[in-house]
Image 1 (cartoon, rainbow, N blue to C red):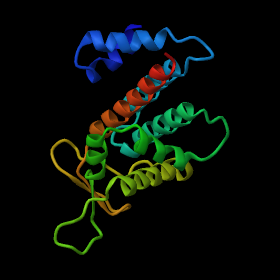
Image 2 (cartoon, rainbow, N blue to C red; image 1 turned 135 degrees about the vertical axis):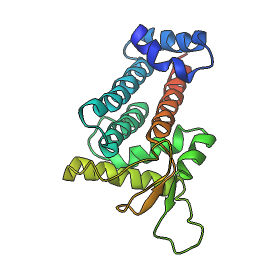
Image 3 (spheres, rainbow, N blue to C red; image 1 turned 180 degrees about the vertical axis):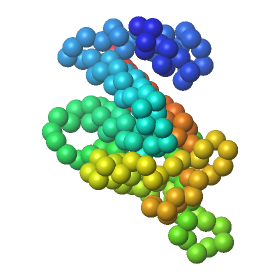
Image 4 (tube, rainbow, N blue to C red; image 1 turned 45 degrees about the horizontal axis):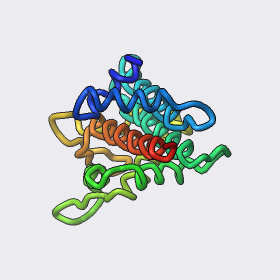
Length: 194
């Protein structure tokens, strides 16, 4: 249980609340153990995203692939989807259904359209940001292109050319948004199982 607790601890105000969340998930038994599976899958996929930097530094697109795999997986499991395909639909569903309003706002304002002719470059908004991230994921999966996109580096925003956006959000901020969304999805299944 320590593996799960260590991962989720930073997303809860107290250790007790994190422990209560993990224990509630761990107590789930088949066939009503979706919350447990969601909790495990989130930790596994996000940890892969964290670990990949050791193998391939400076590959934000590759790391993003694992975040979006997590989002898709969580949305499909939550919805009971067992078929194939519909990846874009479920990635969109994850960001629409499970993010808090603050996280939706943060993600939506995290990228500016660099191709706009306006003096102040407009933010993409949530839907366009999610679609852009999904396209980057597809480029990594289908084209093997995982090196040309970069997030805010912690010091400054990063100008990207394809897509033509300025990233004002860091990878770690997006990572945290995905984890919090996954926790929200998991909590809703815990509530439903009571």
